[in-house]
Image: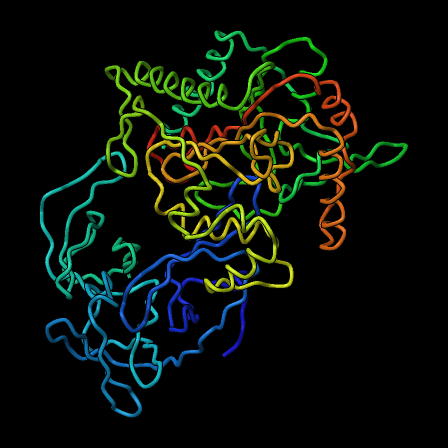
Length: 187
Length: 330
C-alpha cells in the first residue's frame, strides 16, 4: 500500500477510507469562500456497494490500494450476477449488476474485459470508453430534430436500444460510449 | 445553452438597474493592482508590466473590496457598488468555480450586516421578478432548486454556526476556537492532520463533511463565523470571538459573503502581517500590502459600515437551474 495525495486522485482508483477499501467514483474541487481548497469525493465501498461522500483537504494523504487487473471473458448472466472467466487459469468470477450499472447493457458474451480483483474476488471492472456492437434490428421511422440530423432507434445484439444516424443499417457495427449510452461512430 | 447565456446577461443588466434605482453609485475599478489586502486563502494571479524603462509585477484584483472601501473613505457617497471581474489563483476549477468570475459588491455607510442581509434578499427577489418578465412568465417567486420547487419569498432562516456545530458535529464552537482543542477533536473524528494543516482548514473540513449536508437546500443565512477567520469583519460586541459576518447559501452553495466592516486599523494590520508570515513559510506569493487601503479603513474608524460580495454567475446558475458554471459562457 502506498500513500498518495489528493492531487493524485483519479476516477476509478482504489483507496482506504475508514479502514475499508473504496473506489473513487467521482470527485470535484470545492472552495468555501475565503477558505482553502477541498476535494469532495464520491466513494463506493467495495464490500457493501454503498456510495458516500467525503471531503478531503487539498493535500490530504490516503492509502492507495493496489488492485490486480486480469483479462477475463464474459460468459453469461444468472439473476443479478455476471460470470467471467480468467483466460489463463479458467477460474470463474462474478460481478453483481449494481457494480456494472448501465454497462451491463453493453456486455457481449464472449468478449474480453479487464476485471479488477482484490483478495481473490472480482470487485469491479475497467469500463472501456468504447464498445463495438452489431445492429440487429432497425426501424424505418425518423425521429428527432432535423436541424441536427435525422436519427432513428435501433436494437443492438445485447438487446439494448440506441439512437443512431439514419444511414446505420441492420448488420452494421457501431461504436458506443457505455457510460452515456450514446452512439459514437460506425465501426 | 444560448438561452442560459442571455439569461445571465439579463441578470447582470437588472442587477445594475436595481442598484441605480436604490440610489447606489457604480464604480468601475482597476483590475491590475500593484498591492492588495493580504487575506488568508485568497491568492492573486501575477503578471508583469514591461515598459521601455523597467518592468513591474502587477496582480489581478481578487475583489473590488479594497477599491470600494477607498471610495467610501472619501465620503463622496454613502452607498456604492461594483460589478466587476475578479480573479483567484490556487483554487481548483469546479462546477461552481472558475479562476475568473463576476463579483457584485456593495457597501452602505451607517449600516451593519443585518441591513445587508435584507439587501441581499430584496435584490434576489427583484432579479427573479425581472426574469419572470423577461421570460414572459407569470409573476412568481418559485424557483426550481435541485428539481423541487421552492418559494423564495418565504422566510430565509438565519442559522448560527455555534448551534450548527453543537447540533450536527457535537462540538462546542467556542471551545474548538483553541488550536489544541480542535486538533484533538478532529483527530478523534478521524480527520487527517498534515504538517501544513491550518485551523481554518480543519474548521472548514468539519463544516463541509458534518454540517453543510444537514443544512437546508432553500436559501438561508449562516452567521457566527469565528473572528479568527474573518479578519476584515467587525467582531460581535457581545461575543468578540465571533464576527458580524454572514454567508448566504442557496442549494447548499455559498452565493454571498458579507459583514459589518472592521475599522480597527491596528487589528487589520496585525492580521495582514500574520498572513505575510504564514506565506513566507509556505512560499506562496506575497503581494505588497495595500497601504492606501489601510489608510481608508483608518478614515472610516468612527463609522459603522457594511458590505457584501456576491458571485453573480452562481446567482444566474440558481435562477436558471444550471449546474455547471461554464454553461454561462460561450
